[in-house]
Length: 125
Image (cartoon, rainbow, N blue to C red; front, side, top):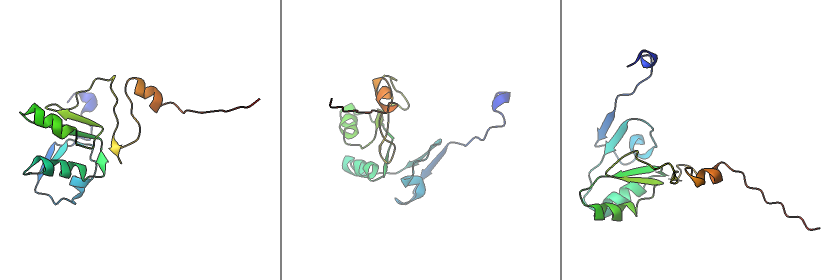
């Protein structure tokens, strides 16, 4: 680490497996270098697992079958879904979560709407 970062509070990347479906690590939105790996037997089960959470900021799908990945991505309830990538985004496109992961969108022209307080004044003369 460079000297200016040497005293930081760093978190080691962590992978969890075998946790219960109601574990906080599984159900809460954690902003850190961590992931829970959960096996599934079908597309439907994977979609159900992903959509059962109260949050929907982002999702990542990794697959050799781009048709399947696109089909699954269309059914995942998240604001952004990466396929065979992560954290890749054109800043002109909308970004924001669904469900309890925020409101509105930012990015490109969507930022103007997100950071603008609209007002309507009707006057009859």
